[in-house]
Image 1: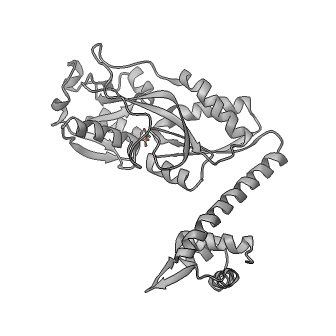
Image 2 (image 1 turned 60 degrees about the horizontal axis):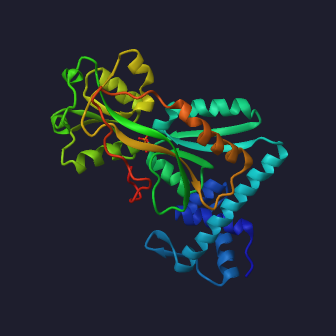
Image 3 (image 1 turned 45 degrees about the horizontal axis):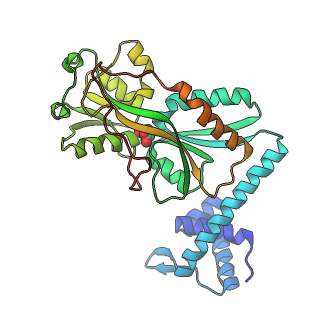
Length: 323
Ligand code: PGA
């Protein structure tokens, strides 16, 4: 079998897009050049890798098998490039870190402190929601990920390093602010401003309401914690956010935490990477730094004097998209 790296790279792109034109655009090649390379690859292997069903390009069984190897080769080449760059640039290196939007409240400060101690390290930080983080892990686009409950099903190394309590917030003038031990059922009629469906916070709050048989009145949907806090402050409804996002607003008295039964929901933060991944020195150092230092970024406990912890999440998720 005669296969070149170039052919594998082109095959990987066509198989990922299931589209010759899009693969050609991504690789800055012409579409006939891509088709020719695929034809030569198929001839070299003596197997058809794609089939045309109507107007759709699909992988044959042999194509699906080969895609697995093409991805692995592509990942390894990416790693080799990173190692070469690390060796060229001395002790530093480049770190791709992705964090849940909610974790950004502490992750940026943690990174800043780390970089002060490791000035040679350059990093790219992606701040995004849980759903995107899962995709990035699957596609090996991040060295390290900081997220809420990791999914099962991907072969991951996960370590919990800090609590992530979710609380109910209201504007300070809301009548429930003065009450203590509010039954969850009493929130049924209250409109909530909620995060987008791909958010770990949203999934966890929905699960808590569902498990207690209380319906959640999700009136308005917003895609960032900042937007939710502003909406709640403006009196548009109640919200549920991690206490990591609240330090300034609580200090300034712009938001209040309600004393609701079943809250806070006790979640945890995890540092996560793929099991097979060979962590570069910079990534290993940052992971150790997170495990040792992150707790210093834990905000003080909040809640009414009677508030007691709500449900505690299991250590690992049982569904691919559970929060
Ligand atoms: P998110 O937080 O709501 O910003 O996605 C992640 C998580 O808590 O799992």
